[in-house]
Length: 204
Image (cartoon, rainbow, N blue to C red):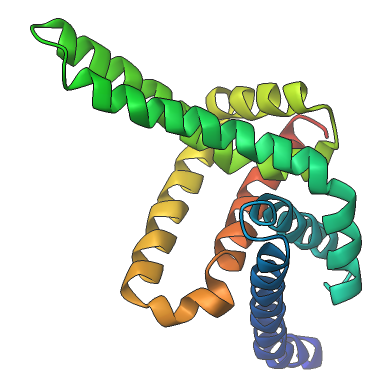
C-alpha cells in the first residue's frame, strides 16, 4: 500500500519534470536554430531534440545545454544535408502541383493523385528520418531507405504519427503562445516514442 501511495505521489512530480524538460528542449531548439541563421540550424537542432529525448528514454540522461551543443555540433553537416534534400524534394513536389494546373483532360486527375501519393510518402519519410538517424547513426542513403521501409512495414505506427502530427498542428495553430515552449518538443517526444516501438520490433 505504501509503495502504491508513493507511486501515486511521484506521478505528478514526474509529469511536471517531463514538461519542464520538453519546454527546455524547445527553447534550446529555438536558440540553436537562430544561432545558425535558421536555415542552417533548424535541421541539426531538430535532430538534437530527437537525440536527447532518446537519451533520456533509454539511458535516463537529463537534457542539458552542453549535451545539446555537443550533439548539434557533431551532426551539423550531415543532418543539414539530410534536411535540405527533403526540403528540395518538397519544393519540387510543390512546383509539380502548380504545373499540374496547366494539364488538361483526364490525365490531370491521374497526375494529381499520383503526385499526392508521392507527397504523402515524402511527408511520412520526413517524420521518420530524424528518429531513424539518431537511433541508427547510419549513412544518409540508408537513413532514407529505412524511413521509407518503416512507413509500409509498420502502418499502425505511421498512422499514429500522422494523427499526432495533425493534432499537434491544430493545437499550436489555435494556441500560438505554446510555440516557444512546446512548438516542436512535444511533437518530437510523441514521434520518438511511437517510432521507438517500431525500432524495437526490428531488433534495433
